[in-house]
Each structure stands twice: as structure tokens, then as C-alpha cells.
Length: 92
Image (cartoon, rainbow, N blue to C red; front, side):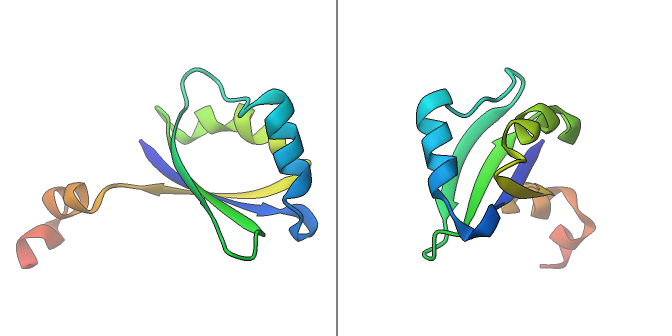
């Protein structure tokens, strides 16, 4: 499954996150795959596309960062998959 993970840096400060990342890396379980990330221009949020067998697999990774970041996890699919797999696909 794909997940868009929205990270909001505590106090709007990305520095502690960057420092930990440089020291320890992403700290993800093996069952989680990082695909890409984007940071908003204000440097207060990061949007990460992650893949895992289920949302529960993200918990260990989230726990490693939850002292610095508030997380929102949104299950997503590609638009191609959405249009192919939903009844809306036939409506276009």
C-alpha cells in the first residue's frame, strides 16, 4: 500500500529533524519503503510517499520521530490505479 505521510515539524523547526536524520538516517523498518519527499517552502512540513504492507508497519518509524514531528498518514493510490479500480473510472 502507498501512504502520503504529512510531517509537521514541532514548533515549525526542521533543524532537529535534519540533525537526527544526518546522525541516524531514516530509521525505518525493513518492510517500509521510502519513495520520495517534498518540503513546503516555509520549511514547516514534509510530505513523504511511503510504501508498506499495511499502515501498522509505519508505527515503528513514526515512533522514532514522534518527539520531533506530528504525523498524518493518508492511504493513497496512483491516479491510474484509482481510475482503473473504482466505479468512477467508467464515468469519465
